[in-house]
Image (cartoon, rainbow, N blue to C red; front, side, top):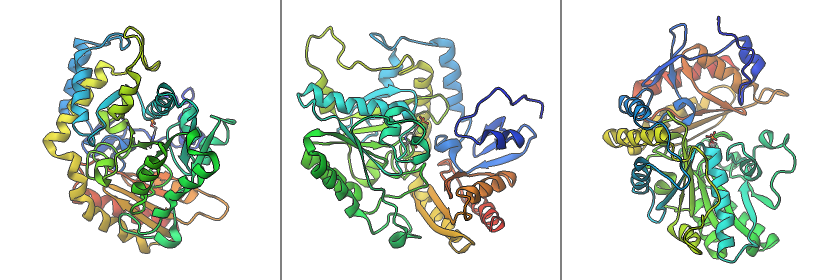
Length: 435
Ligand SMILES: Cc1ncc(COP(=O)(O)O)c(C=O)c1O
């Protein structure tokens, strides 16, 4: 290893452990990464839940190259370039009816901040400015900015950073291993947990609550699949009380569950929907917030020369990101990738559940092309067993993800049966060795 490793402070990484035994990738193609030593590593997590069409797809590569030469940057405030409109029109054809306005950001975290601000400002422009309270959920992950960690519910992401946003409250999480362990697909039990929102309404009064934000399927906390009926129930409680419902679809967007979005798949339409990751196949940073037309239209009042929503980023709708996103949508369409997870789900489910009998496996969860294998923690050393499994898989040529003591799988949507067999076979051996 000749690359000096000292200066780079790595994100969400055990820096000292990494630098003592670095895990580098220097090339990627299709389902695989290649290490600088030339070792092939099968990608079991689509990079980081983002490379949904697989790596180095030619259309996307060419589109980015051509765009860099043609128009490298266009100012996004009071100005625009044609591709950003083209992309917006294409995207809103994929979303559930009603979600037909789109605001561009550069990441999932920025999409979350944008959606929370839209919700607050929406109530204010229509004369309900007292609706300032935001409701998240325990174990939720909504990125790392202050709004996102305030509504988020992963303790390690919150405890270091002070009091955060005021006036935030949380629903209980939906993880219920006593009733739902080893469920295939959506669990039977837990729809009633949505009634927690009624409890918070009774505590704070609906007139103070702006919005509720949840991940339809929670990924970062360790793959929590929504109980049957839960999201429908949350939707109807929000409707009853004039509370906006925000779906954070940063990982479920763009085909992960077998439809373009979890909202399509589950038949529940939120008022605002955040995305990122698969929007550009992970190639260029980009995020977006989809808004119901009524939310957008509420802002379109007042003198026409004035800005309606004081929010945006220098790189909102960046030309390279738009070119990458358009080529990504073409690739998804040509190969039917936005529904491919539904074709592969049964095979994937059977394979993931073969891990159920292995030592220390306390739960297996799955939906679409997402799998979660929860391991019993090593006493007194939470997270260590899953980290060992992650390292072992890496050494044996498969990239998985560990969060807490859960192993998460979210492979590229181009995955074939033999890749599934390799991922599960490698994982089975690693779990056995970590016993
Ligand atoms: C549900 C959800 N929201 C937000 C984010 C944050 O996205 P980013 O890392 O692009 O800021 C993530 C990242 O994994 C996520 O899973």
